[in-house]
Length: 505
Image (cartoon, rainbow, N blue to C red):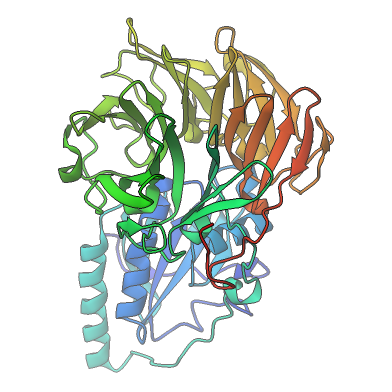
């Protein structure tokens, strides 16, 4: 806890979201204020959003949460990118853009996320950093409300908000698609913002819509099942089974195309707080934001973004456990047990090594699955703040929060998400070169670098075509690798869940 000091006022002329006018500490006097210092790349920041929503609803007459977006990456300073993140994560409280860290410094914040508690008289009375603090904050808010009700300093005046989601309704057929998977059976899309999966053929004909489009954790038939922001997928061609990283449910799901049933195969539905390497029976072991999957033999390897680790699940025995990573958020090349990752968000394999898009250190990592089982950095600085946009070799390469990686024919295709580019990396030499995208965010088809993307985050190759989940453009792009020609796919009859009822064909 910090001493009781007057809360610094918000700077004037800073951009705000979810409100039609700037707010001030003085104006909010009479309410408990929680300042949430966050940045939208940070998995820990995303984990506390449900806690904040719970507190907002519980104390809606006495509490206001204000997000203070203090960007880590250069891309996160762009106001339109922050707006998209607010829409993607359904944030319903006011957010002020703190691009130059002025508010961060005035409140002496040192880590993401940090919750700063301000009492109804405008004094800072405490703060907590990190995750798992909901109960402590809940108790503090309840105590403050009781104290100030007795003092007569609580103000029940309603605050009018102007939510971004009301101003910019997402009625696109896809919403923030996180990953895409091209297979001989068809194209699978993680329609993350719509909490569902879409399967089509390669001409855009819809084969299945899997999930109701409402967030939840429900097994059952395709039109009954529910997901919560699903991301990475892996496909078993022989069994016709799709495995899904159901990220915000902290679970793994199995989609049987033959019986058209969805089943949970790992996770309890609750977020794990255990960062140490561990494991157990899959359905009894809590997980933490599984983000991407790759199947090697009878093993599912999992990029477990929330614990900064790589996990494995034996599909025959149903046992799931940590494969690599201590749980520390860092970049350490070493043995499996002594290595460290930083929010791994993409995974691929050549059957001898796993390749990881290690997003928070903006690096591509290699993880051995045959002896010697070592972890290495293929390219990138390996530094939490070592990001940029520089092609080159090994540690001289600079990426910016890369989220996707795909191995094909001795090369790695990388979704350099915050640079809005697709790059090609040699896993043997660490050479990295930009192939697609001019670096400006946008939606532009064309050839090579004469194209534009908006935070692409998922990649998949089948034959001579590369498929890209172009997340903030809400589309899937296809690249003819013989010409490096980019086109945007159209899906016939697909629409947002709130616009029409999904139909399975």
